[in-house]
Amino acid sequence: MTQPETWAALRAHWQDLADLGGIGSLLGWDQSTYLPRGGAAGRARQQALLSGIRHARGTDAAYGRLLDQAGALDLDPVDARMLAVARRNFERATRMPGAFVRAFSQHAGESYAAWVEARPANDWARMVPLLERTLDLSVQNAAFFPEFTDPMDYFVDASDEGMTAAQVDAVFAELRRELVPLVDAVEAAPAPRTDFLFRAYPVPAQLRLAEEIAGLYGYDFTRGRQDLTAHPFMTRLGARDVRITTRAQLSDPTDALYSTLHEAGHALYEQGVAEALLDTPLGGGVSAGVHESQSRLWENLVGRSRAFWAGQFGRVRDAFPEQLADVSEEEMFRAVNVVRRSLIRTDADELTYNLHVITRYELERQLLGGTLAVADLADAWHAAYDANLGLRAPSDVDGVLQDVHWFGGGIGGAFQGYTLGNVLSAQFFAAAQAATPDLDADIARGEFGRLHGWLREHVYAPGRTFTPNELVVRATGQGMTAAPYLAYLRGKYTDLYSL
Image (cartoon, rainbow, N blue to C red):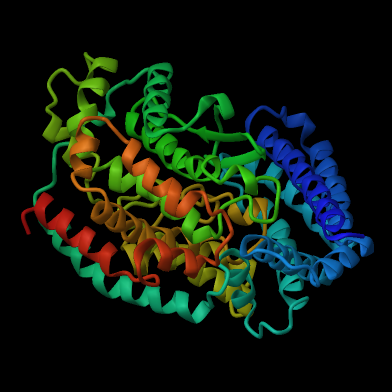
């Protein structure tokens, strides 16, 4: 074939893979939003079948020959990177037998359906054999890649290309060393008023408000939508179909608001990928850490800032005039930034959040390393929370059963991205501030276009054109560093709590 013919054939193949991935995402989205309980077993089979089809398509010998032929082509840097990522995906996929991929997919679907029922029932015993199977499959998965002597190295590299578990360990050690004394100091200071957050806030009004602000951020509802689920997430169902989910509590309006803004941050990233890259190996977020940086940036560095509440408090008070009649803008700002050790990761404040992530990551390392049995995980969870946060959950509902990750996927590599995202969120935001004078004044006026535009140009549009580290360096001028994040936290909470 000629060069144009070879490249056209590859683009057609990538389109098929993207469409199959979108169909899989649609099945998963429906499973987490509208699927009736009786349909769970059938859905797991459908997901397994589709996973097998996509794996077969992604490892097809003719596709491999196309990749080989393309290696001799004269490509520009973007197309060369596109081919390199496709080759990496192909080589990794061919290591895993199709039967294994289908079995893991079906098990994940069945495990998720069981978790949906087991968590509210506090039925950890039901999940033990399922999680033991998940651990076995996860260890098998890593074993297909013997160049990674530590299974966690494989999982970290798979989600954050180029990183190692040792690098993650070093970041976590630095954060634990710096943040624990700050948490202690804040907790010793007088706490802000929060009583008004526990009044009754009608859920429909909460959802309308959250969606309105997500729209102000730049989330395009003509290419997405929001629905309710137990554990919020963002998903891409197609090139121009990026959906978000949220949750809501009658007695806490900030849960729906910040869940929506968090997932909207993920969606802004996906909606901002350059049109020319969609439905190619470069057509999405570059890593878990960079992706999470955007959800945390829009949720926290913007959504919990003083400037944000200067611009949005009137809107929020208009949505809930009775509930907030006796509340000032300053009181709201302080309330949404209260520091309090808690049991639930997704409800945690900015200072204690990383301790939740570190706890899970360390438990994963023990599970994968064979030093912790699944049967002992619930007790190990309680002991770790006691050591890291000084708390013990009254049951497994708020303990080992609280996160969906292990029960709807594999073990390993799922959690470190949250903390890497926190670190990168401050680094990207600092770079945006340096390049965009008076950014806080924009936010205080409810104008997010300049920030969104800078992020779209420097983070979103490239998709996977660069490696994660290359993207960070290009956008901020240096590799990942915790310094801006720690400076942000020290400055914010020293001011808030008059330390």
